[in-house]
Image (cartoon, rainbow, N blue to C red; front, side):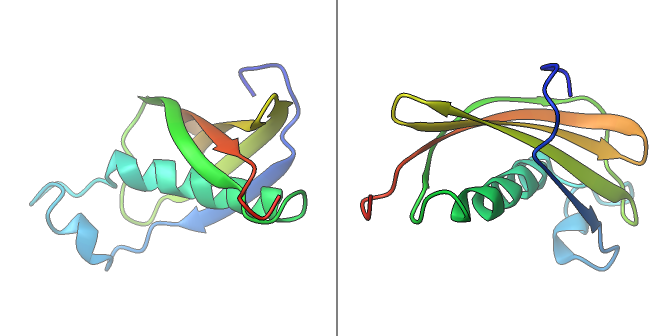
Amino acid sequence: MTTGMTAEIVTTTTVDPSDPVLAGHFPGFAILPGVLLIEYAHQAALSHLAGKAAGAELTRIESARFLAPVFPGDRVVTELSVKAVEDGWRCTARLLAGSEPAALVKLRYRRGSAQ
């Protein structure tokens, strides 16, 4: 990871070429919208945090840098690190398309109301 931390969780998904979101982004040259890369990072974080705290809530996207396009059929690997902070957690994700970095995402979570 770019932070020098070891990934606590690694997830993979393959971009489904028949996903309807690809038809409009961009017609004739389909690429996965960046918001879906953020969603992949968010889902990995929720999966990890479910074992630590029920009801963790996303409070903000601290940063999102899109480094390369992700195409239909690409395999996306999400490497996630989690750090406890004063009111919850900061999650840092590096997303790879094949072996190429596609995005760097930092998300912030707070403890849920059940805590």
